Image (cartoon, rainbow, N blue to C red; front, side):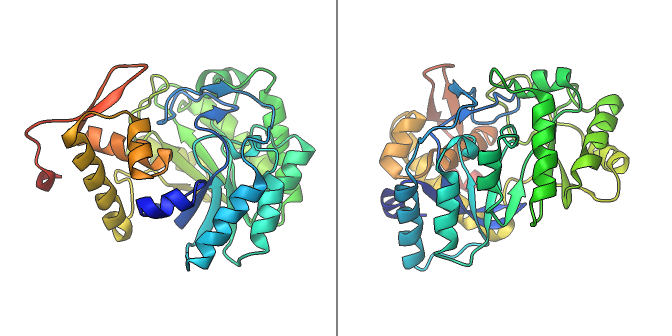
Length: 323
């Protein structure tokens, strides 16, 4: 998406390449890092508002208008995905957004959710209108749940499991359940067998095993080895698949990310910038900017300075052609 397009579409980003959904148009309907979890592996940083109470963070009318304008501009994608930089089920108007969007297009709608609030009948009713639901389950026990997901007060593990099970029974479409593994936290045999027992009561259409891809800004989280991922799939059963990869995006969509990288490098070569500076100047979505900066940091092209009020700067002497 160009900067000009981003100015028009305040709540959309992409379409971006996704290993799970192909070309996905992201719909960001809660403020940055408003979430019911504060997961130790989150690449976006610590949750700034930890809550389990839905609010009208973004109006359905504004979001649907954005999607309508994007469609009028001949926008195409494999999925329109409610996800973004926080937990989408925390927006109390999610159901209205999904209902209205389905009246505009035949592009299938996906909801990526941590699954923490699916025990609430109103939230479940909203999510059930989607074409595919992608929830997550990162623990097999309450103890590990507290360590890895660091949930908002009042969110209990048994309620999360109950919500996932109810969703599985009531939803007529596919459920793709993701398990995010962190080395030394939830990758032991005991934990994997416990997760497997829960999964057998959810019966997802896909069980997708993932691990940490980029450096976490939220805690001490390390990647699980490829060998261990294979072992976990063997324990989980024939329906399990590994979605973790050493590459961030598909080759087909590499040009899109290269263009964004080039724009960010150009800006940072002039002067250091915060994430907010880049978003304001470029019009890119904050989620896209954050991911791109982390990729550039891993490559040694930019560096992050500071902890709380941090900014990024271009590393002198690194040529763009060396990417």
